[in-house]
Image (cartoon, rainbow, N blue to C red; front, side):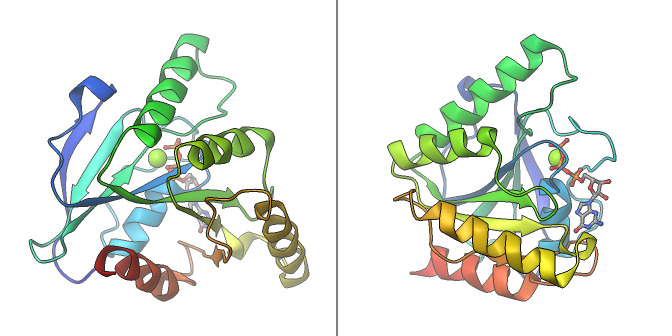
Length: 198
Ligand code: GTP
Ligand code: MG
């Protein structure tokens, strides 16, 4: 992860994806779960991905490229499950997310972000099912761990791990993170490096 990360491409639809080159690691999750913030924390570039207090900030697939020797790209995605956006927008984001997740051979792993305060919701389960069906490997990342007590976090980890047993394409271990405190970043970076080098 050392080196300069930069924005290279934004796709409002799957018809306009960048040419496939190297591997892609993508971040999905409900609106406001902290996808863009996580990309900034991982890369150490605070303004790289645009973040916002208001859900619905990221509206396209956003591709970032690291130094040439990194050999992989990071993909920020729109959030799903944001009820206050216009219905047509929600539908088009959801379609874009599901199409990209099902049809991209360079996609090495998907990180499904779950808010430590809320746990797995039905909309998350739908995405996990899409990933299971397309046999794309994925790992769960709990976000905003700084917002819950240790006891609640332990409960959330246990409940989420239990739910994952029903999902064949899920990586069994989850990573607990906070972009605010940077906890879990070394672990997540190491897991990602392993995916792209093995
Ligand atoms: P969309 O693009 O709208 O789908 O949202 P997103 O998932 O990219 O979320 P984003 O990174 O924009 O963060 C949403 C809000 O959560 C912002 O106000 C962030 O500052 C806040 N946030 C993100 N990560 C953390 C974290 O680890 N801890 C805390 N306390 N807040 C966080
Ligand atoms: Mg975002």
